[in-house]
Length: 223
Image (cartoon, rainbow, N blue to C red; front, side, top):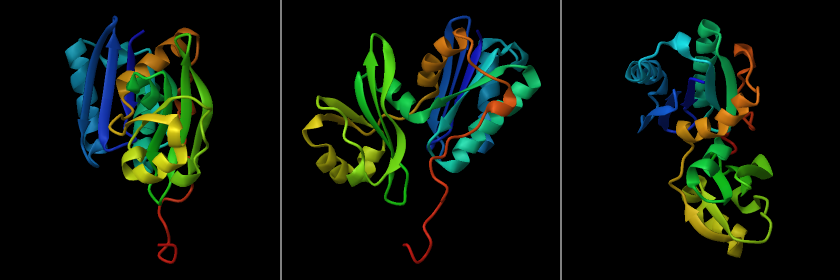
């Protein structure tokens, strides 16, 4: 299958295109320019691969959690491409993508959710496939669920924003921290490809972000 992945949940614009088994990727810190750049860079990847949008069979999008505006951008572009081409859409979680990108086998994934909270999940690779040990949730850093006993790698920018609180909370279970690991479109493609092969994926309207939080910012009184 020719698959395109879109990840815009952080300050990075991450895109990946898989055509005839060859990967074409774009990953760059763009601040808040995702909406401005995404279609142009998608077009550049397609020209590089020698295909048009109608050659796509699947569009993968970072479903969240993450920055609200970023999630809507990836979701909206996935919906538009699917409507125009008939491609199926499939969401991949950003925390799962962090685990896949890390290269570790036991991962505590944390993304800075602002407002003194983190998006958190725990994954373990078993027989080559990721198992969700603790599903994505929103927590104060000093109240994240403890993973099972053992050695875990902490990944994601939540470990940069709340390093001390997470270190104290996770204690000896945390044997390594890699706060620079971010969700990438390439990791999402690796997670999505077997799901597409198994018949997953749906029409455009099924592309829906996963927010985990309703509030965008604290009130003045809360600050």
